[in-house]
Length: 286
Image (cartoon, rainbow, N blue to C red):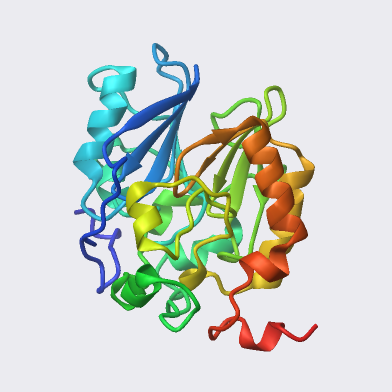
């Protein structure tokens, strides 16, 4: 392993797998979503082209699966022009170092996410007390020490463009993490939302494992700023996405997406903000 690159000390395989694990879905001709255990990666680009980008990097230990899914779609030996991270939580950067070493490809994230990706800052601890189900209870075992990608990680351009993704712009959607971004393409209103919202109720282990569709708030046990999360959701609703790939759950489109986002934004305080948990106590009364 490249000397300057390292995962956090607490990095490890997490044994949680949904029914969709290993399954890929072509959402649009140039937008492909593949599920690694309980999290999604996106491959953006036409299948026969060498000009494509990987968004997010799966779970710890998933590099071989991600490389195989990429080669299946783009051909043997193919490599993305860039890897873009919606944020740096362990389940979105799980294979990043192996992928950088295999492909020698640049990695981009929002400037505010860089401290967590260059070994400078830990994410806040997950909150196992948050109102929610088994996954929150499991959350203390999730890795949250920062990895160090050294000089391999670069900030996304400040003009909102996304390197190698013509037509897409990044939108800052903090709340779940400070430098969380979502990617949006105006021409067909395609959205890669990351964890700004997800389509499975992440606090229910049953729903995560069976992937029952429900437009819902970001994963509760790791979201630290609910006010920002609500504001970010409002931004995403206002651009009226036609189709969305989220970090967890199945891709959604059309009315299911529109109505689900509306409901989530309009009733955010009732249905999204947990009733209790260490990151909500101080926010409840305004």
